[in-house]
Length: 113
Image (cartoon, rainbow, N blue to C red; front, side):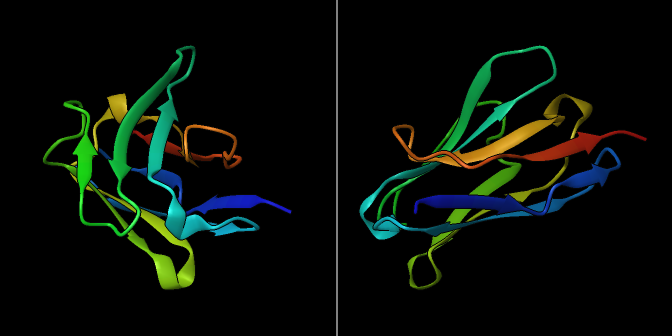
């Protein structure tokens, strides 16, 4: 059974930090580029970060460049998202995905004072 389980979301003040994790099972995690995608309230899905299979290449959306970092641990089948200098506009549900058939259930992040 394929599972992607995100964790680490919550409420944080503007300027704060959070680290999200996504643990994969049931498929060959290390064989896929992996991504973080978010959906803000009332808006569509927004792709924000990608990382290559071995983790040596990353791609960032302009909206998060310089603030967010994607990484992975293939030995633990885990994807990470380090979010710094958070803004209210970062409020969204964050999903890990291979942008094909595998999607997590999402973890909510709220940036508010």
